[in-house]
Structure formats: C-alpha cells, structure tokens
Amino acid sequence: MIPLSLDQIATIVGGTLNEAADPHTVVNGTVEFDSRKVTPGGLFLCIPGARVDGHDFAAAAIADGAVAVIATRPVEVPAIMVQPLGKVDSRATALENDENGCTAAILQALAKLARYVVKTLIDEESLTVVGITGSSGKTTTKDLVTQVLSTAGAVVSPPGSFNNELGFPWTALRADRNTRFLVLEMSARGIGHIHDLTEIVAPTIGVVLNVGHAHLGEFGSQEAIAQAKGELVEALPAAAYGGIAILNADDDRVSQMSQRTKARVITFGTRPSADFTAVDIRMDRLSRASYTLSALGHEYPVQLAVSGEHNVLNSLAALIVVHACDIPLQQAITALSQATIVSGRRMDVKELSNSTIVINDSYNANPDSMRAAIAALSNMARTSTEMKRESWAILGLMGELGKESISQHVALAKTLADCGIDHVLTVGSNPEMNSLCDAAHEMGVSAVSIDNKEDAAAYLSEHYHPGDVILVKASQAVGLWTIADTIISAANGAAE
Image 1 (cartoon, rainbow, N blue to C red):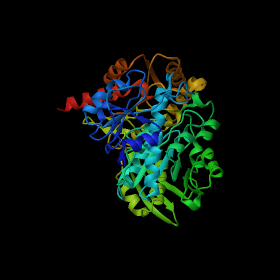
Image 2 (cartoon, rainbow, N blue to C red):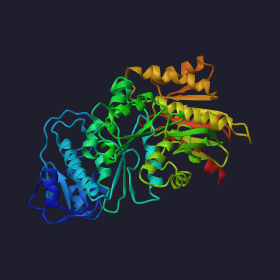
Image 3 (tube, rainbow, N blue to C red):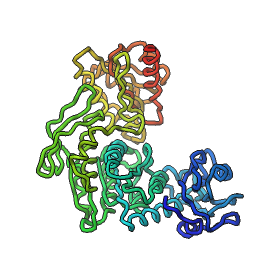
Image 4 (cartoon, rainbow, N blue to C red):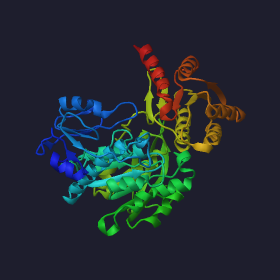
C-alpha cells in the first residue's frame, strides 16, 4: 500500500480516530484481516467473523507491529472507528450472518481504501490493472499472467483464489508505487457481484474465459451467469481510453459480450475467426500442450508447462493480456513456456518414484473443470509408450449446482465412458455420488462407491498398480486432497 496517515485513512473510509490514535501516524505496511500475518507499520481489520471476532485480536495485532486497526466497536488500541451499517442485503458469502452490518462496515472501509490507493497509482500512470473472470480457469490464468508479466515489472496478484469482496480489495492494497501490474480475479455468486467489484477497482484490461456451470445453483441458469460475467466488460474504459476486452471466441455466450462493451475487443480460441488462434494442438505424455499460435499475421510455436488441453485457451488469454501490456509477443511466449500453476491443488501433476502419476485437482470442481480433468487423465494413460497405465478417477461432490446437481453428476458418466477411464471411485454417501456410480456402471465403467475419504484412500492403495494414473477431484469442501497426499506419501516412503 502507499504510505498514508491515520488521519488520511479515516477521511478516505469515512471513519473517526479514537483517543489512542495519533492522526500523524503513517501506515506503511500491509492491510491484514488475519492478526497472525500483520507486518510492522501495517493496519489490522477487526472483522467480526462467524467463528472469531477480530476485535478480540486488536491488541495482539498492535503488539506484532500494526500501527492501528479499523474497528466497529471500542478497542483500547489506536483505531479508525467505522459505524455498523445495520442489517444489510447479503449478496455474498462474507456478509452472511452479519445482522448488525459490522462486517459490511469493515468491508466497505476496505473497499474505499483500495479504491483510493489504486486510483492514485493509476493517476500517477504507474499501474495497469487486469481483471479476470469466468466459470473456470480464473486462478490458472491469473498464475500464467502473473509469471509472464513479472518478466517486465513488479506484479501484484492474489494468492490462490482471493476473488470476492474481501480478497479482491485486500489484494489491490498490496500494490504500491513499485507495482507495475495489478492482476485481479473476479468471482460472482449472483448478478451484480462483479459490478460491485469493478466499483472498487475498475480494470483497464478485462478477460472473460468462459460461461460454464459453476455456481449454477445460485444463478439458476447459464444465461444469468453470462449476464454476471459480462459486467466486467461493461465496466471497462472505452477503446479510446485504453480499455481492452479479451473474449473467448469458442464460447458463444462470451463472444456475444463484445456487444456490451466500448472497449477494444480481442478474441482468442481455436476457431479461425479468433484474433489469437491455436492450431495443430498436440499433447505430450503428461498432457502438456504444444500448439501453433496464429496472431498478428504471424505464426509462433508455443509449448506449455502446465497440464490439460483446456489450458490452451487459458494460455491464449494470458498471451493477449501480456501483449496488451506492450510486452513483445515472442518474449511472452518464451516466459509462458516456463510458467506453472503456483496456486495449490489445481492440475498439480506429480510423477512418483514408482512411476505412478497423481493429478491433484482437488481444490475445486464444476462440470466443466471435471470434464477437462477427466480428459487429461485419459490422455496421460493413453499416450504412455513405456508401460501400460490404467486410469483411476477419484471423484467427490461438485457443490453449488442447485436443482441440477444430480443430473450434472450423472452426466459425468458419459464423459468417463467416452474417455475410456478404467476405474472410478465415487467418494461420499450422498445422492449425487451414488447416482454417478450407478450411471457409470450402466455405461460399462468399473465404478465403486465409497462413503468416506479414509476408506477410499485405503481401497485405492490396495488396488492401484505402480505406474497407473490417478486423478483426485472434487469441490474444496470435500477435502479430497488427503487421498492424493496418502498415495504420494506412501510412494515416497517406499522409495526411502
């Protein structure tokens, strides 16, 4: 964050200083909502969460180096006090159970501070802001963009998936006068959410990756999802002021968003009509793609270090972002060839000492990312030439699909059959996983239903053969990564 005095911050957020606060004290550290991560000179947010109240940790934050806190009730340390907003219309998870509007007041203050800091940096012409949204692929694309842009200057981007009304401004406040690029993920669980984020920080460059089935339960339809994702391109500056909308030409719902923006539109995809087109896509033994990029009247060979054919589109979007930031395309391609997914449990491919390949994609799951991961599993098993590899899909619940939850799980059976997956373990005693198991059986896939993660790990450990390929995937709440950890630890232990 740029250095600001407590008096300045109080004015920005509409708060008042308590008696313990010196108005001339300068905040020159980070803004944190976890007291364990406070840095010297920083500012601590006293968020009253569902499990713990940040006000109870105000003194500890000051002892660890924070110079002040933002609070909604009296504390005995230097504080910027903001008024609770009363009962608010909760539209996002961070505001649930916020009957008094205390959390909303802290988040509102955080948003105002982020808006001020980023606008200051943009006005000084030292910062370019990139926003990325889509039903899937946001975090991977963010990781790729961050690594490639870092070859040209300092980049701030969120760790993991900090992309809601808390993580979004928190990330923005990481930017300072040394930051050249700010790369932000933008998520939504309803119409209006992305618009709200653009009111906090408005990107100049906006990427819409796809419109899929993630959070279908909240939205009710893909049309509503498209409406929400398009709020990003609506908020971009006009082309004359540098606005650039980067749209997936392979997704009709996304390409139609060109009609909703005044920004310059650049498209990507595998269709010949796209501005940046991937042709002659080839996959190696670890499902890493290479392809020929056709763009700007030239052709360029591209090799990816990340697994999964779906990452071809993510990489195209990343290349356009970097090109739009005035970095030579060949420089971007060279950097992209070394870029990996740094956010954990997302297509994390490990080849173990016993030749087994484990694909840990357990951070999250929706029907689109499930199909992509199953395709990668199939590719890795089929393209092996040095040994026979059987494929194992260890699948858990995909959350937030609403009334279509069972049907979307059942539909995965056809994907498993079409991809020739040898073995399926459905983990969880619920109608969705039971229905998927039954449907897979009917499609001729060898499928076993197991009630819990521990039994699934034990079954897999007993039945897989060294050299097999194992995919572990489910929504984050299932915690299915423990199965991947079990297989990896056992193989490592046997090798020692």
